[in-house]
Image 1 (cartoon, helix red, strand yellow):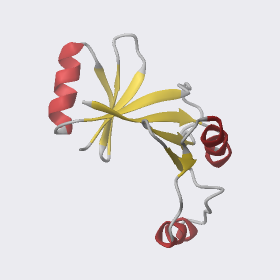
Image 2: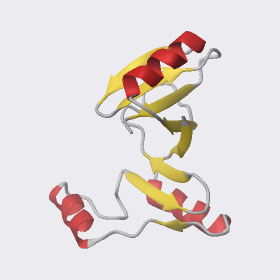
Image 3: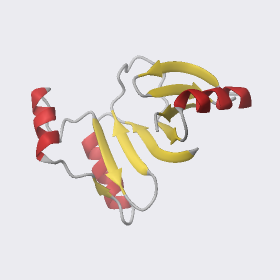
Image 4: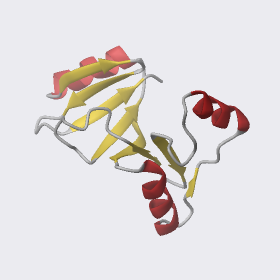
Length: 123
């Protein structure tokens, strides 16, 4: 597996993404094309109110997103991993001591042996 994204929970993803893009050399907020702006508009959103903002650079992508359920315990940073077939990678990680927390569309959230969350994404 390889590290694909470092994911940050945030109150305002666009502002936090701009901060980290300015703080880190070689990083920039991912540009919005017309199709993405139209997709957001159909949801009543703009790039400034986008609940998920990506920052690209020379290392892993930084992903800033708002918590879907703010009443859940907060884990401000987690890793997104990608490798082979998701089911096989999840089984391998469970055998190493991880536990499955939740299945989502295209991802599985697991917890490491100390309870820290991370996600395995579809390749």
